[in-house]
Amino acid sequence: MADPLVKLEKLKKNFPLGRSFFGRTGYNVRAVDDFSLEIFPGESFGLVGESGSGKSTIGRCILNLLSPSAGRIEFAGKTIFDSEKGIHLSYKEMLPLRRDMQVIFQDPTASLDPRMNIGNIVMEGLKKHRIVERGEVEKTAGDYLELCGISRDLSRRRPGEFSGGQKQRIGIARALALRPRFIVADEPLSALDVSVQSQILNLMSSLKKQFNLTFLFISHDLRTVEYFCDRIGVLYLGSLVELGSTDDIINSPLHPYTQVLFSSVPQDMPGPRPVRTQLRGEIPSAINIPPGCKFHTRCPYSKDLCSRSIPVSEKAGEGHFVACHRWRELLWEKAGDNAAADI
Ligand code: SF4
Image 1 (cartoon, rainbow, N blue to C red):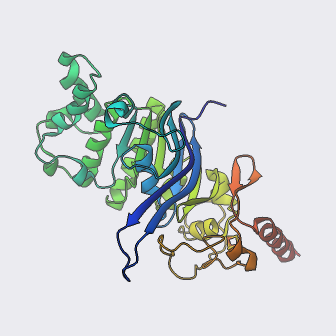
Image 2 (cartoon, rainbow, N blue to C red):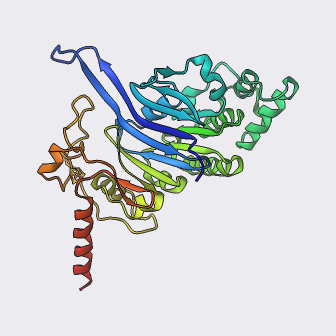
Image 3 (spheres, rainbow, N blue to C red):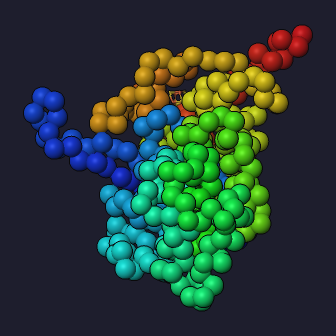
């Protein structure tokens, strides 16, 4: 197997709070908690979970846009951050890597400078990273715009003259022009009309094949993750609760949280679906994370042990991992129910 392009080990990100509502200090928002993951070259890895589960924070830590609190981040064999060895690359040290690591933002309007024309927006990175000879910059920018479905004849127009979907295409062209190896796509479709979402998803999919790109695809839209990703990680309150191939996670989810998440996907999608389960209550605050299994306050299968002990991630199959004390037991119960239904 190839070496991972991105490697995260026991990553933590806390946001200290100055003072709580009651005046007490020393509180932390534990946005990411002991998160480990490897992303391999050429794959699309989907990170899913409810709002506030820490998905975007992980993406930003990888890109070094946020400083992790602890753990280790490696990209293409180079350590970006290591709390034990005191390594944290500076802005200048990150520059050679920046070209390889690009981002597609959630809000295409906010991500494009409204004062620049779109040709200059794409050319900016080409010039900064000296991707092509000076005389080739304008032509190259036009090539990437056209590759993303925007005519080069529109290069002198400003972002305000384009629709949301077109702006996202311009954002993708800007990222792609640097010929990156890795792209963090942070909810790239959620600000777009439903009619445009599939076009952008198809564009990303064809560019991924054409340029052998590696994606971290962050989304709460499970249908797009199912379509676009090779593997999926399910995040709950900053921790990975299940990891596996898209087929494993969609068709044989083992963690109760994954089962709830994917049972909410509309039933017109192909493939078997678990019985729809309702969650109890809201996701707890990341300031006051429940002890033991973080999901125990909402889990329909919670037992005493769950509130006392943190479940470790166990191998449940080839490349399939789950962090739940009762996953085997629940699987047997389900198998028993299915056998009874067949009789
Ligand atoms: Fe539910 Fe317990 Fe499993 Fe947590 S460990 S998901 S509370 S059954």
